[in-house]
Image (cartoon, rainbow, N blue to C red; front, side, top):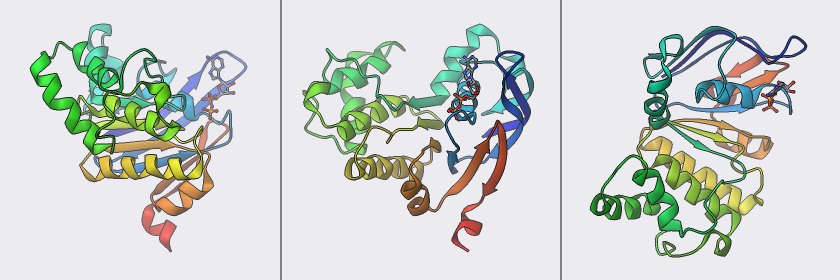
Length: 226
Ligand code: ADP
């Protein structure tokens, strides 16, 4: 699903954000990426969403070779990859329903289908009944689950969650993690970055550790349990 082969990213001559990273993520895998601030986690995610381009090396996601990707193909790529951020990035003046619907409106889906699709996705993230709330009327955990609903409503193959629990207290963090696990069970590949050691320990998933732009450990679930 995701293949990186000796990928290097330098922003300028002084700093190498990623240094010959190789990583293979299978379809339906759940991978946690950890590392200190400045290690290169965000850069890795930005390369996958094509917000940044690699300096060298090969990136293939869902069969798409990023070297051959044209600008006009980028919207299509972004439909394959849903993204969730630490600070939610919801539209503050729109309801929960409208925030999720917006992701469908911009790809031209009709109203009837939107009315059919959005409640199903809100159900998955356990926000049934909150359709008419405004983001400010929700807890942080609920807001993050709206953001997840918006990220998955177009059924991406991959969900990237960049520190999704960074602003949340433990109870709400676990609600969010539980939703990520559910989405993964339904068949979506999940890539999660986190600083939260408890999340890492409890999830018992593959953990990739980045330090100074290099992968210094890649522990599979089996090894993790041992
Ligand atoms: P993390 O997400 O693990 O905190 P980043 O990927 O943001 O790490 O950063 C990795 C390295 O790349 C850091 O040294 C950071 O200063 C540098 N870096 C990140 N973004 C830029 C940028 N836009 N321009 C220059 N340097 C950057």
